[in-house]
Every structure is written in structure tokens, then in C-alpha cells.
Image (cartoon, one colour):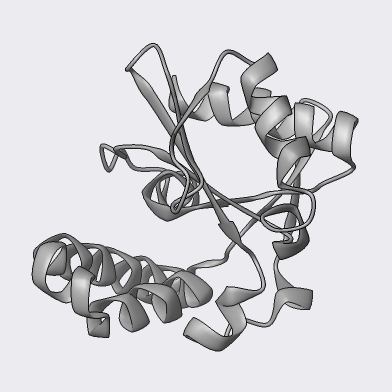
Amino acid sequence: MKKSEFIHIARLLNEKLNIVPLLFGSLGLEQRLDKNLNADDIDVLIPEIFLNENWDSIATLMNDAGYTLYDFNEHAFEKSGLMSVAFAAIESLTSFAGVDLKQIPVINEADVKYYLLDLHDYLKVYTASAKDGYRKNVKHKQDEKKIELIKDEIRKNKEN
């Protein structure tokens, strides 16, 4: 359900704002690993300019899609109390985890374009997250499990 909702939002971003978003967080990792990780929400990375100067266009798009802004600082929206979508800047991946934005693969699914990190970049992100204060204290066990899942999958891929 979350994945189909992401595709719906990505389609709106593609068509109305010419944005190719990045499916991030646990939901993106679920897709990359092809495993259910029980993602809590939908994390979407978009160009930083849309979080600052062009924020109104994102807010309007999400409002038109039935979402309500519930946390301005986190750029987070919810729909019917069931679905949560948070936006962050794609550019932060470089400084935070050393991800080369030009190397992120583009996925084309049902005529919707979006970016999805490869396993090596997910490993960089979760390794950097494990050092982050909040994540280290609150999400440490979950992050460690994800790091192990990623490493296992990378090892499997090397063997094949």
C-alpha cells in the first residue's frame, strides 16, 4: 500500500512539478532488497529548492492529493491518520553519506520515474545514520539489522 502511494505521489511530482523524486528510507530499502521491512512511512527526497523557495508547490500538490501538513520542520504530511510522507533534500545525501547523486539509478515503473539507491549507497546511508545522535539512541537496533541485511545481500550478489 505504501509503495503504491509513493508511485501516486511520484507521478504527481513528475507530471506537475517535473521532479524525479528518490524513494528513500525503509520503503526504498524494502524495494531494493525485495523484503518487507515494515516501513513506518514514506520518505521522499527531492531537490532542496522545493523545500525552501518552492515549498508552496509541494504543499499544494500534497494538499490536492488529500494530505495535511502535520510537521513543518520535518516537511511531513499525513493522510487520514494512516499514511505519513516526509520530504527531505536529495542534496544532503552527499554531505551526510558520501552518495554520488549522479550515480543513483533511475527506475521507470508504470511510466513514473524515481530514483532508488543501490545497496552500496544504502550501506553508506545506514552506516552514517548509525553514527547520528538521534538514530544512534532511538533506531540503533533497527539500523544495525538493516546494515546486516544489506551486507548479506551484497555478499550474495558477489557470489552470483
